[in-house]
Length: 125
Image (tube, rainbow, N blue to C red; front, side, top):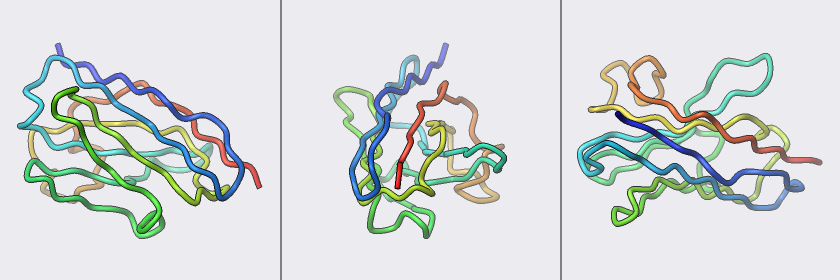
């Protein structure tokens, strides 16, 4: 049984930093493609960042230079470090996993097989 468990998040003022984590259970960690998504109220789920099996990273333009996706193989944990946060970053953040990079696009949510429960990030102005 594959399970993704997120933690972290919280509330911060604009310009601040937060980190969210995603622990992976029941998977061969080194063979999966991981992504972070977010969804704000009334908006569609948006891909934020992805980490390939080869260690390659991809980011949505709005977070480039501010967010960093990484993983700790020893802990089977995925991270998203968020710096210089903006109010528009406010959303529920989800981690997701796929056997391979979705063929349609890295940020195609339908291409991911498993999802975490989400963790809230709120940025105040």
